[in-house]
Image 1 (cartoon, helix red, strand yellow):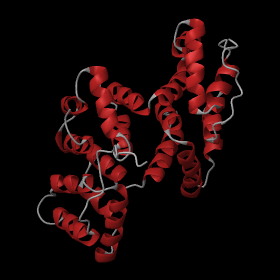
Image 2 (image 1 turned 180 degrees about the vertical axis):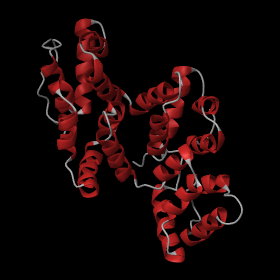
Image 3 (image 1 turned 60 degrees about the vertical axis):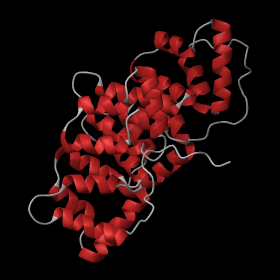
Length: 307
């Protein structure tokens, strides 16, 4: 059964890479850059089509399209356009590299990417990370993190959720010792985890999340909760990530951008529905109120509509 497409950005139907490359060239030439034309074009092409435009541009003008765009744009808009022009797996790998390689660790980015990507995506990210940065992702993560938090990140990197049921549901052997929690949450299949949630609720009358919030703190707590939320519903998880990135003092633009770009071809329609339901306001309106200029326009194109 073919699943309905849930992205807000779809492949453009009458696609012509050479025409698009010429259009972008014109939009960047002459007096002033036509930012809006560039945004409209790139946000109405799939990532795969953008790669073809990149190739056509190089062939016609002998220049790298991304470098050309960077020299015309600046600030947040530039970062967003560069993100749109990067293949998804490379984008994830570069976001992880940035999270680990700067001063301090961007734990939010680490947690969000490793908790929400599929096992196959994680395998590909590890390969690309090695190729792009000549380093092992696991080694870099271990160098930057510690304790049970590090342990769970490493388990998630293995990307293999056990298919068989190793935890006899109903025995009540939950406890909240971190070791058990990490083993159960890190290594179990999603279907199995849902059973565990139900059993937990029956036994203790509360959600497993409540006990995690009570017993753990900091990065470990955030990572455990992110994994659980993604098992329950990835779109719900990202609706919350987006809400938090905007609804506080100062916008967390790197999270906002990363989410809008990386979910635009996957489940943005579901994220929008979840956002509306959870917060009683549309994602579109929230972006409008929280951002400005061409950067705002680009985000709204990626959002794809108001609910």
